Amino acid sequence: MASTTSPVQSLITNSRFSSLYLSTNKVFLPSCQLLKNRFSPFSRSSCLAFSSLGDKKEAWVPMGMLSAKPLTFTGWNQNMRRRCQVEFPVVSAAAADADSDGLETEISEGHAKPSKSFAERFPALVTGFFFFMWYFLNVIFNILNKKVYNYFPYPYFVSVIHLVVGVGYCLVSWSVGLPKRAPIDKELLIVLTPVSFCHALGHVMSNVSFAAVAVSFTHTIKALEPFFNAAASQFVLGHQIPLSLWLSLAPVVIGVSMASLTELSFNWTGFISAMISNIAFTYRSIYSKKAMTGMDSTNVYAYISIIALFFCLPPAIFIEGPQLMQYGFRDAIAKVGLIKFLCDLFWIGMFYHLYNQLATNTLERVAPLTHAVGNVLKRVFVIGFSIVVFGNKISTQTGIGTAIAIAGVAIYSLIKANMEEQKRKAALSAAS
Picture 1 (cartoon, helix red, strand yellow):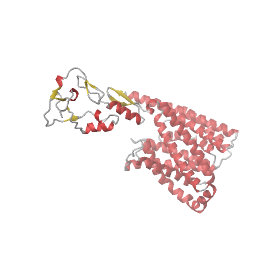
Picture 2 (cartoon, one colour):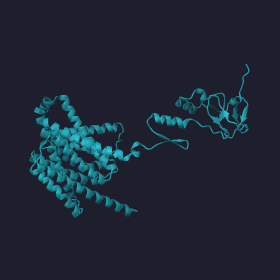
Picture 3 (cartoon, one colour):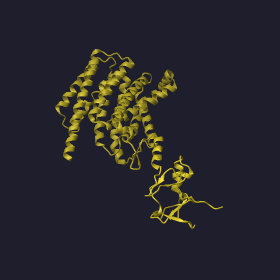
């Protein structure tokens, strides 16, 4: 039977592109097969077939003899123009694949370029979400933590649980690569050890205070932390603190004193524990500045949590261990049940780790001034919500003293943040 060959099916050879020929004998190269499999909307006939120089003697048509009329391939809905430019549907298919994955793609100069992410397009919205989650998790943690202490008053053991859950969260995050674990060596371990010790001490003492007095009163006492920071900077590090900064701390001291004198839940255990916590966190800040590394904040906090856990274990075992084994666990399970008891311990640990991690991540996204104001507002939220949830009765003097202390912290934070910003600008101008 005589075969009929249409002009469309004529083979092309002797062109300026010696390595590329078109043939009716469809020999699919791997690249062509890959295109065919990837872009399923195109049929087999629509895949442009390539063949190498074969041994068959066939009539080849030089590229230069083609007319200016468009050359149309059977089953291919594109025209091959005189310049031999074939428009492959790769870009549109790539865009379709990207859209199916939930990503937006911009087509520019024949290439698929991913557009900006949501965080890059709406940074203010994302930062606001970080602040909201920081406040929300902090409030939930303080409320749930105090509820646990109402039926399980063992702050040393609960402090360990906080860190155990946080360390477990870090290990799982590392295992899935979110974030990728940064390596640690002996030198970095030595640098982070004093930071972790101060973190452990401040964490345990805060929980001892939470268990002994009202949450609102503990946070009022912890408002004195800027005063200890300034004192340590002046007398330990030898940094000169301006008079304006010292004067801004006067309302903090006066307000805390007023609140303490008439606090209905006042006891010395809660008060002293909160003060020790302030001192510990102050030295944590000092050692943190000395331990500045190139590691990201998420990995640094993870390592600090792991090391701090080893510092928290001994006091929990020796101080509360015998009581827990005799009646502590038994009484808690009898009051709320085993499932609720375990769930409460897990969630307070998770909320503790997440709110601290979010506080660190938020600091990376905003200026020190914004973070300082946010930290003051966070304390206001915690005090206010704890009073409402637990129905704590406070005297008028306690309320006024708390308000004065918070206002003093706000003024101090604003002045200090402005000073740091001026130092940063001066350093940049000197460098330029």
